[in-house]
Amino acid sequence: MVPYIEFVHPADRDTTLAEVQKITDGAKATKFQNRYRTKDASYRWLAWNSIPFLTENLIYAVVRDITDEKESLESILHNQAKLIEVEKTAGIGSWEYDLNTSQLICSEEVYKILGIQEKSTFVAIEDYLKLVDSDDLPVIQKAIDLAINQSQSDRLDLRILCPDAKKNIYQLQENRFLMKKVK
Image (cartoon, rainbow, N blue to C red; front, side, top):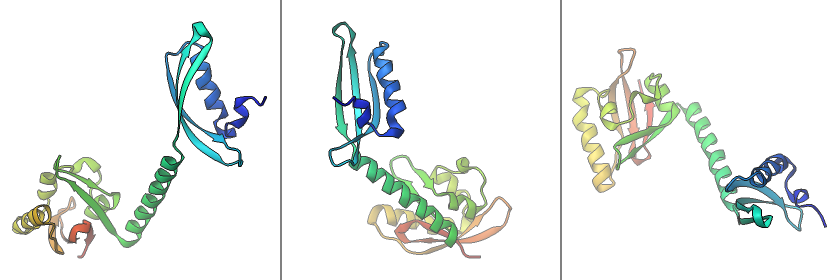
């Protein structure tokens, strides 16, 4: 009989052995992930939940195949890295507005475009609007209302006061929530 550890991916063996040791040492329960070799010699990602019954010299475990989830996450992370590179190259930043929390979630490039060092400078829409030239506030407020209530949007050119005390013009494009410096 082949020891179970031989089926575990070589890169995951130390972690797997450490988790098994925790349980045999009396840990109440443990959760971990590793890759297991299949009949066709490929590997599948597994998520383990284990609980020991030391008086019976047993370990009960429930395992779930999470290969598809891992591959999806890997694809998302890969695409996210591509998006970051494209934004840097094009000088375009992207952002989202969470209607439930009134929070802005901005890409790194938005902060770079605006010349803002700290990410926490604005996380609420109200903080961002403080940067907008007062003459442009009605325009952006109307655009926000249309986007939220009617899913309508348009390109906007806004004057924004940056930390260097210069007013620069930035372009917001449609529902894609893109921002780029115009002047």
